[in-house]
Image (cartoon, rainbow, N blue to C red):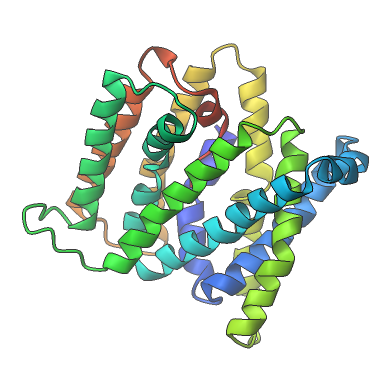
Length: 292
């Protein structure tokens, strides 16, 4: 529940942070905070000395993972939040688990069940409802670029977890390596695209919150929850509470207008995900990963 509640706040935190940073600068600052937090966690767990050995075992593999997530994934995701209302970007990104099913069939040869097809239809119908604000017959998108980026983020996230099925390393060390590897690329891109301007303390507080709770501590909480439970499917289903809490926070904290079509689309997406998880039969990768 702690992980679910913390993830429920990140959409609001994203929009607040983007008032002070560009998406690229936000990625750099949040990634740095997350890397520091994960380093502290690995040190506390007595695993930090294994970091170099883990990297040297498969350097190109971890380079690829780091370039996908956090570098490409968060760059695309933050830009989507910059272009779209958070109440639209968050549910669109939430369809990543359905994308994962299709990509797992394509790249891992996993069979797509009948209920998976039903889930895909419900999920992407929800995406269309949100993107068109309910006018699905006209297919008029207010911000096609933002919608495309939000959907691209689901592809990147699914690709990351598919590649992660080959990762036998400690999950905290694996994620930490991704952040450490991506930081030079993120920082270099931020310098290339524009100068950093002075940021007030409110901006640094917001981006630190994103790095701490979107990318860092909450990931560890979720992994421990999955490790301690006797029923992974039941724990995984708790995450479906998150987007609805998130919409309430967006409406109350930053006064964002929540369209009826957004709520209807989100319900369709969540129904699709529940159909997909029926009888708890779901890929182990998706069960152990998280949403934003």
